[in-house]
Length: 176
Image 1 (tube, rainbow, N blue to C red):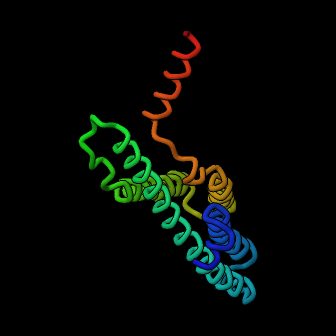
Image 2 (cartoon, rainbow, N blue to C red):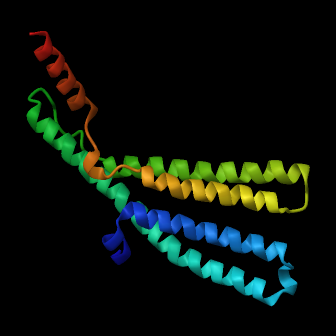
Image 3 (cartoon, rainbow, N blue to C red):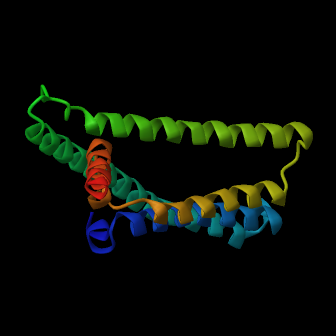
């Protein structure tokens, strides 16, 4: 949590994903330069595993905090909307954290499905491992790290109804 407090969720998630890429790179080097017969290559993979442990703690802590921040912001906006809207029956703000967490876990499980499918397709054609598969996964890892920087801060979250009402008001004022 201290790292996330200091650097923010998006940067901590970027760092965490890069650490996963570090293990893929260490494994690639291990297999390219002799594998089990080379002591330094074995140590490199173990060091890569240690780096992944540090990165995973930052990644998962930041991910959890960001989802909770999104949920808190969404509940606050929904609550404000319900207070302003006299026709509302209220209680639309329950379960935002659970909904966001379920969406995250669905996408996360899809990533396992995609990774397994890529491995299956690759090894179905060519039963021995090669550099290209590691490079494919390394590329996916770095692309994922870059995509963490496109996550919007929770403060930018808006309710769609309110945005539409503001646009309608602008259009009406322009017409009059």
